[in-house]
Image (cartoon, rainbow, N blue to C red; front, side, top):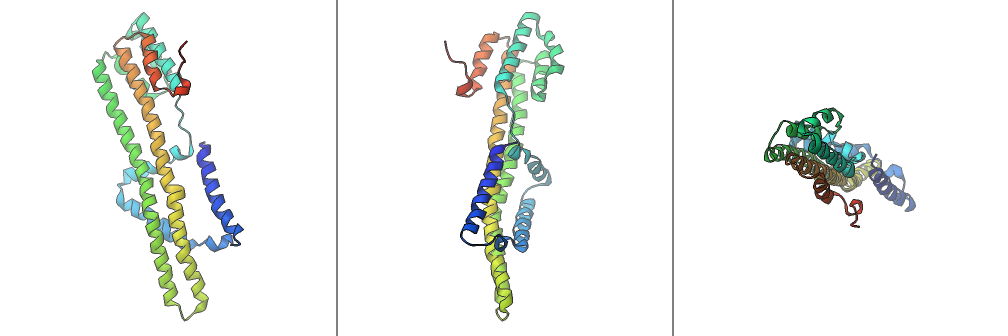
Length: 254
């Protein structure tokens, strides 16, 4: 679970709702089902028109990147690649075949199979980089879907406000209906702006950030496998791949 996402949602909602109460307002005054239906229904409907079905469904599936942490242990991955390089250096590439089933990362497994099959280093890089580019593109577009939700929501909120004002104007002769119409008008704007800036835009940003982290891990694997295919010294491979680690995780020179 990504605690920062949960804390951020709780903090933002708590601050806004708490401020409403401290100012003497009532939570019920901003709980308007009609405004919610107008803003959320209109926003999601607009995004559905904007994107093809596969992209929209992929974006919904990638919501897991918002609420769950991406587990990338680059240090352990480097150690695993160095171990494979050491084994290959001692016993040859075919000795790596027994290690395939022990690998839990499908991307590393696929790349190692290419190495075992004798694919040239250039070919390995090209094949795997195409897969990484496709992965990055799909996830980046998922982030853009949420950003589009954030772009449409305020405008739909304004649309809801105008509809509320129209309702008010139609019932000027009936004071009992004026309050509900004005409430829908203002609350729709709050929902639109709030949903965009508290949820949709930050969610799109988080998906993009975590995608970069996953892409960096795959680039590390590509570099390691290419070095393995070129039979580079395991120590040199470890030094090279260490550049992918954050500064705090790198081995300090003695």
